[in-house]
Length: 176
Image (cartoon, rainbow, N blue to C red; front, side, top):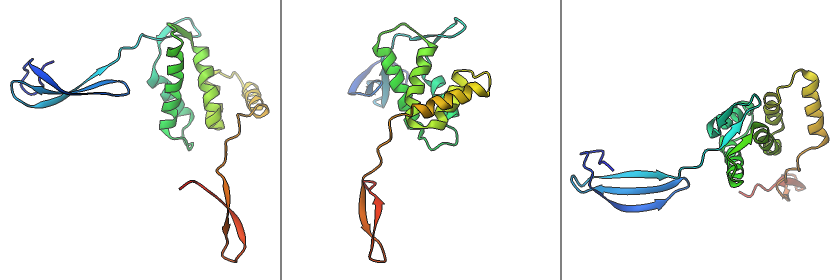
């Protein structure tokens, strides 16, 4: 490892820490005494996605996240939540130790998770993923969604709260 300050190749590791994606090392140059940080990342085995037209493409976390961001545009979904969805899908695929996975499988996994987050983003993503040919196909997807809704979201517990007029009203307990 070359020192970024003096280009010397002599350095010592002062501190090492695990991170989510690898190892962070704090180094000290033995020539100039300055410190710098290096990162070691785990090299994952490539995961190939088999496209509908037969092409093979390496799985792209960023490409999938980009599609989800477009589908959820102007929706109240935190980008971090979509990032976690993509990580979940990628981790599940890599956990199965597959070298190649059909794009259909990736799309279905994403739609299954997105369906529980936001119904509009789900329909938008499905419209691109499934390449609806006309409104009838989109309508069928929406009708299927309505016929088989995702598990209901748990609402926060309600607790009585005194009203200004002395009566009680229900208030949402947001745990704050």
